[in-house]
Image 1 (cartoon, rainbow, N blue to C red):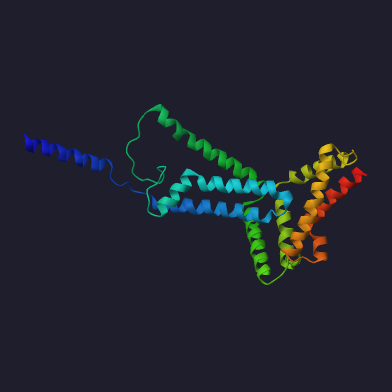
Image 2 (image 1 turned 135 degrees about the vertical axis):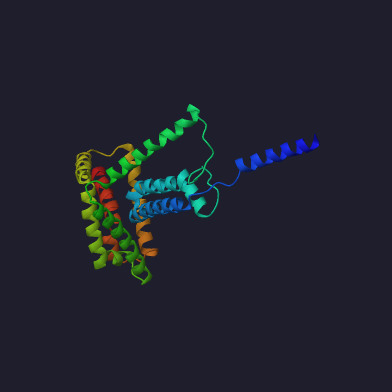
Length: 260
């Protein structure tokens, strides 16, 4: 009786071991997915780095949010773990898995995956706009080239204004503008409509909120000038040529005209 009991217990232990044993992981697929995601993250971070100035704050934040979402995506998290030889937290990149229950409740998330892929594909297609695959690749390369060139010029002691005037930077920026225009042809029209709307409102007297905003804008302009001079070493001439400062002062001038 004792021998039979011991044999049964041994059988149960063997069953448990087989059931909970190590799973075979698809390391190659995980590393490929990890690389693809990191390329997307790199591009978004590069785009965010180009969005300088106060007016681009919202767009920079949007890019940052996209990066955070990509880094927190379950499949990417698992890919990073599997690439390091760790067990995937969310069960991705496993070659052999235990049979899944046939419960309809548990089948629902699996059915949602293709829809998500379609949504991502649709979004990617929309983002590419009128660019060809080669032009899309060129756009990303130009962005990175600008970042690398400015980093190099900064290390050589050039100010921000001098960096912007560098012939190679100017050429790349112009090319990037052309590609972005082709990528989003409707963007220019939207900007024109927005500018036209601003022009109409510029004749109206200042509201109470705008009167309060006037003083705040004056302070922001002075703070920005101080930052350009002390942190970036801009000369007076370079400050006058700074596009962000020009835009800030233009808005301030408009408010002053309406206030008078």
